[in-house]
Amino acid sequence: MPKFMNEIDLSKKRVLIREDLNVPLDGDRVVSDVRILAAVPTIESALKSGAAVILMSHLGRPEEGSFQSEFSLRPIADRLSELLRHPVKFVRDWRLGFNIDFGEVVLLENVRFNQGEKSNDDQLAKAYASLCDVYVMDAFAAAHRAQASTHGVSKYASLACMGPLLAAELAALDRAMRSPSRPMAAIVGGSKVSTKLLLLETLSKRVDQLIVGGGIANTFLAAIGKPVGRSIFENDLLDVAKSLMSKVSIPLPVDLVVAKKFSRHAVAEVKSVDDVGSEDMILDIGPSSRAKLVEILNPMATIIWNGPLGVFEFDQFGEGTSAVGRAVAFSSAFTLAGGGDTLAALDKYKLSDRISYISTGGGAFLEYIEGKTLPAVQVLS
Image 1 (spheres, helix red, strand yellow):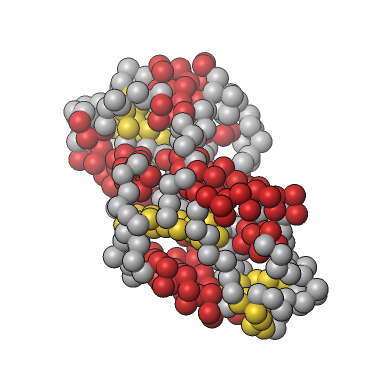
Image 2 (cartoon, helix red, strand yellow):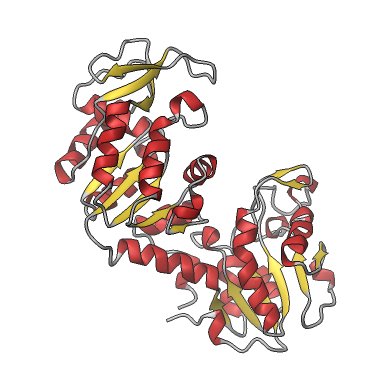
């Protein structure tokens, strides 16, 4: 079993914490600080313990080995200082050495500027490890990547452990996937079955109801012979859709919201599932389908949600996502939501604070549910 940060005496220790501070920026302005806020309790806990706190994170996808100002973590340091109400020093060239006292916080520059980060280079991992007495992996969203700052450093640090945020993410996922209360439903939206095929296969064996939305639902509709017009669907996966429907209950729409073009200004029209025209694009589910899904979700004891049910970014095609979101949020079930679009929908409809647990991970969230091993978690064991 891995060690946990709260089990370790951090007093007078140099503590290196890998967080996920990969947030959207507009110039030097942080657009959304959700991930920064999630990391604050871990940092505060280490500070209260009397540690010298060194933070590292990635931001975006810069070209490795070179500095690119648009991917600098300096704006993150400024925002973190405000949230902590504590100065955060920013160190760009950390290999040249830097001073830090106990009770101070330092944020290192973007780890993806370092040559060898993605390839999990041993020398870089050793350099990270030399900075600390204790290494804390707390970045769930990066736990599915075996990189120098998430995986390699654990092998060379004097002591490596799991941070509170990572531990909380795994506990929530384990509750939903390994010992769920029944009945259980999963909602999977997105544009393509192919990108979430393993997720759908895994969930089909575990849930009582599997709700599909977006372009994924179109492939299932086409599989049962319904017209989908000019909508996104995958013709080569119709047999896969049929196979999944033979394994688990997958309720499909009975009415849809369609338009002749994909546009914020497109005119929305409600049609029966049998009346979709050759020029129509399916962009949301209709009112009868919304009511049907709400009725299905009401008695559930566990609900996992990943992906919207329509093009919710355009208000006229957002009612399906909004209705299902409210059903999830006001359910008495244990509810777990993850994925960037899902979080954006929860934020838009002001439902975030009613979800039992919101995962800050994207790819890691999906891979864990799919049953894959997360390298950065495994190495801690």
